[in-house]
Amino acid sequence: MKLSVDRKPGAERRRLALSITGIGVIPVIYAVTGFPAFADRPAWPLTFWLGTIVAVAALVMFHLTHKALGRMWSVSLQLKEDHKLVTEGVYARVRHPMYSAFWLMAIAQALLLPNWIAGFTGIFAFGFLFFARVGPEERMMEEAFGDEWRAYVAQTRRIIPGIW
Image 1 (cartoon, helix red, strand yellow):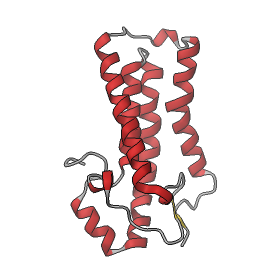
Image 2 (cartoon, rainbow, N blue to C red):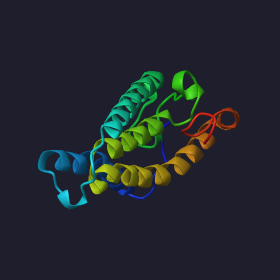
Image 3 (cartoon, rainbow, N blue to C red):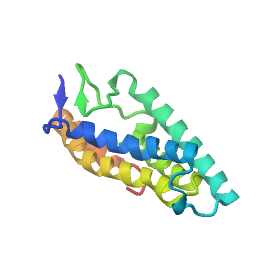
């Protein structure tokens, strides 16, 4: 079984490129060049330490997500041959722990980079990808797994345990 959700050629690639630009390219440009310096804000030690803690949490979540998914992981919205619904590990608490990890990384970026533009582009860019992707992904999973998916949805939250 191989089911792809994105029926608009290139749309997924553009969303991923935007997200990578916001979470990767713009922060690196800022870190290397200081551009855009006009948007700098004060750098506070507390935000640095909070950002570091959040970044470590994001990396741990990302690792646990990959470990739980194993060969079921894919960068695009598709199911693989003999795909199984993963509900163990971090997936027992939230349906989209990898998205949770990326949200945490975007928040860490905002805390770590003392620049209103470079710091917050990750939140906006990943937010665009997340909100464009999560609905189609959940519809794909419901179509593929039916009642098993609906039961899983009833007992887990999307990205924040116990909240949303």
